[in-house]
Image (cartoon, helix red, strand yellow):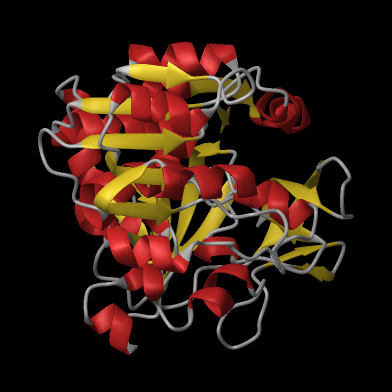
Length: 366
């Protein structure tokens, strides 16, 4: 079938919106007509070839849409079901069987490899194969092939045009607080970065009942949005010394910190602002993948600090995405305040606006 897709053909270049061909769903696949797809920083890291998916590629991994057809072996979905697409996992390795699919031993191959497990490609243009199956979906397209494991059924009343970001950025930030750290009510937390992941972490901290929620973010409108969705304090790291400001607010140091930006100075500050037995979660992907942390190990030992890394918010999508949708319906998780929608054809304008700080979360609609 011929569909419309945004292709990343060359590093550091705009997407090309073109007509391409998509195959029929295999026995374990579903064909989804896309309603909307979020634009994630991870997509842009692939365009710049910081992350390894080969080009040319159809990216996109925060899709939401309606099931058009199902493979012969699919039992979880039927045509007409509304779904949110998330990351892929094998379901058979030791981590998947332990209920930790975000740490699937086959995560890299299934989500960044650009092919199905058997090496085939689901998409082609002018008879030439394209890297596809990105995060098990490649949803920068009017239709996408996904798997039973990386699709989540949602109610027909849920707003599909908003839900795509729950599949990655939103569940990553919220999950870091609600699942990875499991921050308890009354605790204090510092969140570095006011993008989609950071602001989702702020909202997750509100849900958890954290008493002091400090957002560190250089862009003013993102600091304001952070305060609007529940941060109790906001710090501009360009104007003030972050650690000093945090200790002024929480003299004993914070119980938790979350670093979402991937900036090395923020990583250092996220450790230094912790109190005794504090816990830090590293969520952001550094642009320099060879970067190392210059941690004061003795200081960390003396204070009993814990540093952990977080992938996809330690989420089990079938459980966590419906939970976030329910919280949104109750008015307790207003992630829609981050979203700005663009017609799919305007994907390059959406990229420019998101990189330029003119919007927090761009969502492309079909």
